Length: 174
Image (cartoon, rainbow, N blue to C red):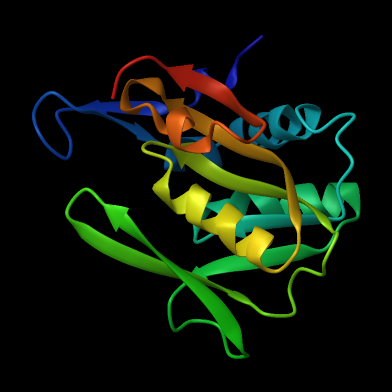
């Protein structure tokens, strides 16, 4: 039986020499791979009580929305700055070279709601940590942070040490 990592295309020396790029598009382009990825993510939420699934732009949308559908939960978008039409709150965080800002609608999370955050990949953890802080600023509780893939060599879990973090596939390198 195939595993999710069997569907992930690994591209050596991209975007620079010495890096192995883990390409999620090969999972999405294979019906069996996509179904397996969603099933594996869903299995990691068994026993987790939540009110809302939230995903970060853009691949968090791809994996979070089917989970919200399957679990009959609302889905909340965490987007890049300037993309949401209603009143938002925002969080700016550091990137390797510069900063980025993400936003969430002010009415997306209600105080006391239990939230699962989803993204395709954890590298340094900056984006998802900023998303967790937005949820908490709105009064929500992050009960789980879930990724399809993890680049353990970049130590993103350190930024998320106060959260319950899980990944379907863990790659030891960068």
